[in-house]
Image (cartoon, rainbow, N blue to C red; front, side):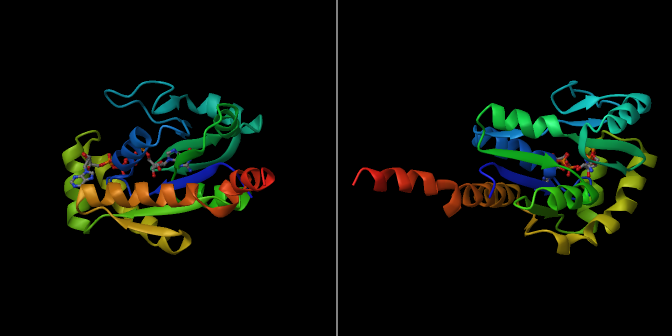
Length: 203
Ligand SMILES: Nc1nc2c(ncn2[C@@H]2O[C@H](COP(=O)(O)OP(=O)(O)O)[C@@H](O)[C@H]2O)c(=O)[nH]1
Ligand SMILES: Nc1ncnc2c1ncn2[C@@H]1O[C@H](COP(=O)(O)OP(=O)(O)O)[C@@H](O)[C@H]1O
């Protein structure tokens, strides 16, 4: 049983997982974000080491060869990977939870390695709304939006692999749902059993 809550957040691009992850991390200070490596170019406002570690393909391949990644995958034409160091960092910092923003391939690999990991899949209320959000975000050109939208079907096909589904229609409700899931997982009996045992010792 893992003391650390291993929370995987996954969704088709544009469904809102970044927005929901930010809200979760703003509210649960003892949770941390797993900063992935990627070969995608930084978007305006993104900072190296905060949203991602931005690297080129050669560096990424080296990191794969060095066994740096707990999982990695090609998504929308770029490489993305979760460094084992991120999980070690969370533990070293005494965090209670870590959030992985990964695609379904990453979710599958993390779950295979870390059995206690919990998967949350965020659904858009409709495909029309998904397209509106992708276009409205304004971070990708038309071709990249099209590619992300086309991949959305494939992502959604894998919903059955996850423990929880959250429909991100009303944002406040979706935020509450994700926060609720994280909190419930943090309060699993085995995670707090040491506290109960400590009390019993004082009898
Ligand atoms: N497998 C895997 N997927 C990742 C990782 N980091 C991000 N992703 C996924 O890559 C996809 C693209 O992410 P991003 O380029 O930030 O675009 P966005 O989803 O449109 O905001 C999303 O599905 C992310 O969840 C990772 O470390 N591993
Ligand atoms: N419930 C919602 N209602 C309307 N817009 C939303 C909602 N959730 C997210 N958005 C907007 O949709 C866009 C995509 O959200 P984002 O969090 O970047 O998605 P993802 O990380 O899944 O690609 C952003 O512009 C965000 O502000």
